[in-house]
Length: 510
Image (cartoon, rainbow, N blue to C red; front, top):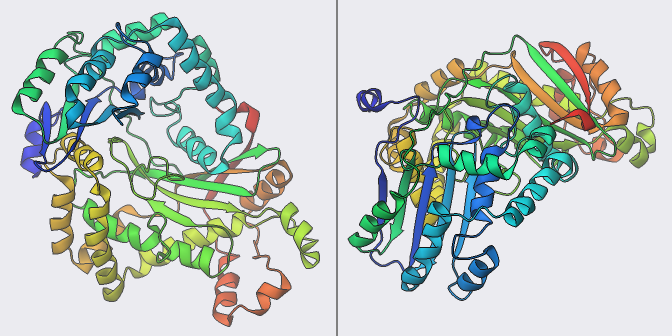
C-alpha cells in the first residue's frame, strides 16, 4: 500500500482515477458526484468564503437555459435532488435521480456544472444568506457548532485552514459576482475534478459525461497546500464571552500527524472509539461525564474532522483533509448562574462545571495513555467497529462518496481495507498508537460561555484552582463512594494551562 501511495502522491492527496464507478445492476436510483479539489484553502486573502459562494451560486442558481425556479419545477415530479458540500480541500456536487428520468435530468445537471447562469439575483440571494450566517447565525444558533468553528479558527490561526468555509464578516461583504465568475473559471476546471457514478447505468453514459465535462475551463489551477500545524506549547484557552449563552460549550484540539492514508489509523480508531465514539453511550467520556454525573448530553472524541456532528449520527463522506487534528467535544455544561438559580444549596458557587469537565475528560485520556486498553476492552471495541463501519456506507450516496474519498487518500476502498486492518489488529498495536498519538499537555481549547461565567472561569483555569463538582444535595446523596472519590481526584488534576484569553463574541469571525 505505502509503495503505491508514494508513487502516486501529488501535493498530499491523490486524484488516482478520473472516474470512480459503483455498478449496481438492480438499482433504480442513480447517483452522480463531481468532486473538485478546490476547497476553502483556495479562497484569496480578503475574499475568504469565495469558494463557498461560488459553489452555492452554482447549486442554488440557474443555467443558461433555465432559471433556478424553472429547475425546481422540473425536478419536482422526478423526485430528484442535488446538493453541494464545501470543505477545506474539496467541493462535492451530488445529483440523485431515478434512472427512468436520466434523459430529462441530465441536461439540468450538466447545465449547472458546465454552464451556470451566474445571475445577479441568484448571487445576491446566496450572498445575503452567507452574510447572515457569518454575521449572526454562527453566533446565535448553536453554541456547540460555534465552539467547534472557533476552535478551528484558534488551532489553524494564520493559515489557509483558519477561516470558516463560509468566510467571515468582512470578506463575504467584499465578494462580488465578478469574483464568483473568475473563481469558477480558475478553479472549477476540467483538470481539477473527479467523477463518481453509482447505479444501473449504460457505459455510454460515462462517455457522455466525459465528453460534456470537457466543456469546463481548460485551466490547471494552482492548489495551495494544506498547512503543517505546529504542536501548541502547553494548553491555550480562548473563552468566548457571549451574552445569554446557555451553559459552557467546549471544544479542544491539537494537530494529529496521521490520516486514513496510514494503516496505523485503524489502531487509532479503536482507541478513539473506546474513549469517545461519536453519539455512543458505551465510551468512557460519555460514561463518566454524562451517564454517571448527568453533566450534559454527551461527550465525544475525534481523530479526524467530523462534518456537522450536531446533525449527523455517522461520519459523512466528502470532507477529505490532509491537515488533521484530534478533538474532544464536551457538550454544554451548566454555568454558576444556572446552578444558583436551581439549587439553594449552590448559592455560593462561583464557577460552573466547565473546568471540572475539562479536567475529567483529560484525566480519562491520561489514564488511558498510562494504562492502555485491557484485552477485553480492545476486543469489544474492535468487534463493535468491525460492524459499525458498514453503516458508514448504508446507501449508494455514501458508498460512492467513501470510494471517492478513498482515492483522495491513496486507497482503493477505504471501508473494505479498514475492515481487513481491524481484523489483524492486536492489543499491542492499539496501545502503541495511544502512546504515539495521544497526549493531554499541549492543545487549544475554546469555550463559549455566558458573560457572567467568563471572568471567574478564566481565573480558575489560569491558576489551576480546585474545581469541585457542584451537585444538588439530592443528587449527591445518590452517588457512590467511588464516584465521589474520582471527583476528589479530578478537582485538583493539574492542567498544563499556559494562557487564557477572553474574547467578546461580537469580535469573532470578523
